[in-house]
Amino acid sequence: MRIDENILKNIRKNIRRAKKSSFYKAHFAGIEAGDITSEKAFQSLPFTDKDDLRNAYPLGLSSVKDESIVRIHSSSGTTGTPVIIPYTRKDVEDWAEMFKRCYETAGVTRADRIHITPGYGLWTAGIGFQAGAEKLGAMAVPLGPGNTDKQIKVMIDLKTTVLCATSSYALLLAEEIEKRGVKDRIHLKRALIGSERWGDKMRRRIAGELGAELFDIYGLTEVYGPGIGISCEYACGMHMWSDYLYYEIINPKTGKIAPEGEIGEIVITTLRKEGAPLIRYRTHDLSREMPGDCPCGLAYPRIDTIVGRSDDMVKVRGVMIYPGLVDETLKGVDGVSSEYQVMIDHLNGKDILTLFFETPVTGGTEIKTLEKGVEAAFKKQVGLTADAKATSMGELPRSEKKSTRIFDNRY
View 1: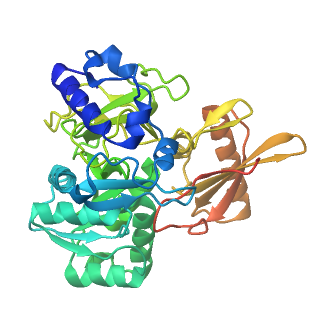
View 2: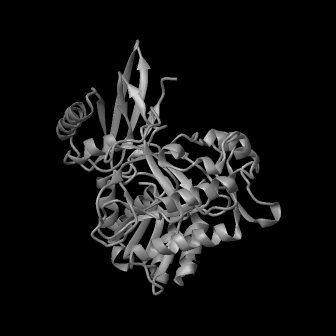
View 3: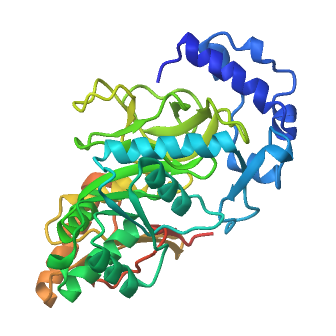
């Protein structure tokens, strides 16, 4: 995404605002907003990372007086100190407006009934989906996560038409609907799926079993929450709301801007956020910029579907592996379902990679043939030898939140 003078003006304004926080006052010591007069000058600014935000706990990111904070949200904190993000009234309204835009891009109207399964509370997901629905004027049905029996009953009884979920939970619901034989009683037309990456096989399974058109929605707690970008009916990347944020795609190792079309890490700078502005924030999400205009006519720039995270990339025998690479490998193997797990261990002085995958295939000979086929595809695509292990459908874990695909047990 190229910087123009209007974006630079907003970035300078954002830097002035950010430096009212104790974190950015120290982080940008010696840097003045007026120094940022070009794209090159902007790219000389230091990155902000999640560890920086953790170190700012609890409210070191706040750029406003406490009286102006109307809400806080937080990361889960499961891997350390949580990140606390304060929101002003305008931040909340801007987020709802972006989310409304997401619904409209997905073809959702006021006549729809929106079934919301992501969690509420300090996490941003549930309340973001609800605020956008209310801003649009559609009926919000705020179920939250869990209680699959109730989820399906409400889908049937209230005839909800739009599902909001993580890909893992959407798959779980789709499998349960199929298992219970109630697909003809489900009225879903669209599903907005976010929170984690997912492959083509998983996408096709969910769409087929739910009978719904799927849309990727993007976001993260540190930058408002879900709703800062979404795919359109043409499913050729996610439109990013560039009037609210500026993004870069960088090489995660060097920090330099990645060549157009090359996979890299998304870095986001907010342009309007008041409570906790962020400048050059490393999301660790991996994607690439989509060149050219979208057939849908939206003028907003696009990034591709998230293929993984730079902090999820692992090196095995000198080769970098991430979930999108495994998805791409399994996509071309008939008889392999969407669900898999990679286990990496260090035994007898060498790294061992085991790839578990689900399949509807039964029978010893057929299973062995399929495992050999997966091993050959993995060797060809990734360049590593894997020990492929078939499991029956539904055997690998399902989650109401995010699913972990790669487990590195070497350390």
